[in-house]
Length: 221
Image 1: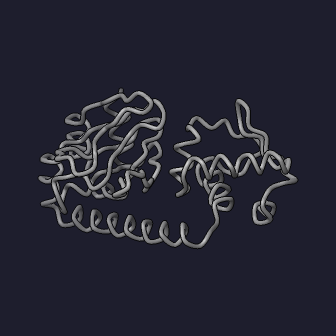
Image 2: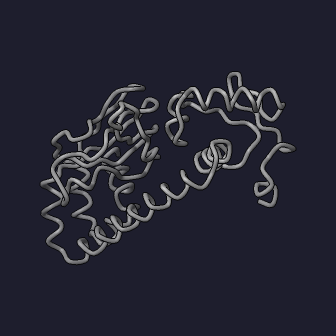
């Protein structure tokens, strides 16, 4: 039953739409299930690797380390998303680090097995298309960080990851949220304090964001 779940998740990836049931089953069978505790590392930047991953549950943070030691979040991976597939072509070393933001579970798929599947031209085309989408995502990310201030980025984070609502049971630490919106924990803490003082949010066990304080663009949705 677990292997069938993996097969269904793999089939949902754009990259694997062209694969037949036998090929998907072979990937699922050769995949290795791995659980991660909060904060546990899956791999480190520049580490040699031979697996790419599919997130089954939880949240995985991909980040790069700046020369001054700061961790710059590239993406928060959601369940059902694939990551680290760049090692299939560009390099055998991971370009980012990956740690579990919360308790998570991944499917590790061997690089060697997938490379055999790439002999199919249709699979190759879909893979290249997937990489191009990731490049567009990174370009949009740079534009996002340079265009919006930290408060706007925080609202965007809530909307992108949890939808528009009045109550947010957020499992991530404030440090991880700060990294996800491209700021440092101290700046994020000051932002939260300002929003509390202005009565815009409350944040104890969960974040409460009353509808009357929503950004204007949220109210039309």
